[in-house]
Length: 451
Image 1 (cartoon, rainbow, N blue to C red):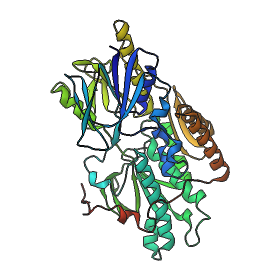
Image 2 (cartoon, rainbow, N blue to C red):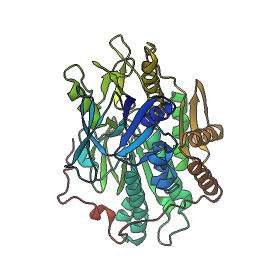
Image 3 (cartoon, rainbow, N blue to C red):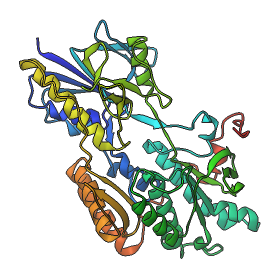
């Protein structure tokens, strides 16, 4: 019987694993609760109107249609039977109807979601950005804020509508804050008659002592200068302790301050997929999850006690074999490399004994764009900023974007946007006459007391 490989997750790790098995004598089943692969590094450009969702997402069936040994299943994974070697499913059309996928080898690459560090009630007021729905909600709120400011006669309330807070100064937060400042100062500055969008304030709040804390201090300083030139106010050493509809409370070494802003975005932390916990529960006491919900796997990316199960991407920490763990950045490359590594070991196991070399992540560098012709780069120890870094960022993101059509569309949109300072995806969809913050409000207001 053909060796059955089930891959959970159609993100970077899962898709890389599936592609690596395309010419192997295996029957691959890729299962995901969505029917598309999402290029998350460009999700913030959907949120800020530069790109549309279809520009950065590709249907999984289309991506893998020429891979004859691979089947795609759209379903929700709800658990694992490790002893019986089954993946348990709950179909999206009917959550009460369950199915299963038997496997000989399993690769779990379910990714991560945003984390509010125990304050999930903040999510309504400050949405994170992990899905297309999140990005579209942020875009809607951002554009509605300018429309509300245009109609507001009270100067204090108008200032609230024209203020934006981004929490977290990692790459996503820095890129998003820079884009928001460019929208206000360049894209929209001639579109309104009552307000001047250039009066908008963008705050970037970071709990550490510098932006882009994972980057070299020199690059962090360069990024901070670029943000300041764009008009972004950077708040460092600031811990958010309160969020409600109109304010963000921040504690720092200099005291407490209240930022009055109607639009907030959360980019401060991630939490592993709940499937990491489900796997840990299925194994038992041998495997525990950390505060971020990640589980520890062997140096070969295997689940302890179950060498036929591999776990890759943001939901794991990798043991170094000496009691510690290997440090991984929260970017796409570790997931891609680990997915390929797991696929290679499965293929080797079909013809003999898998190579005993443990997984080693090869750092290909870090890139972050701050705005128009502004970026920072650290590529194999070579650190640079400005236009060269920006061009490198453009090339790398186009190279890794899935689908030739998407690459052509994105390059075209970027070129037009660069030449015109415009953003074509600025539609406010849905019931635009209703305040988005009221329309989406829960039946009872979430608690907002300070943590």
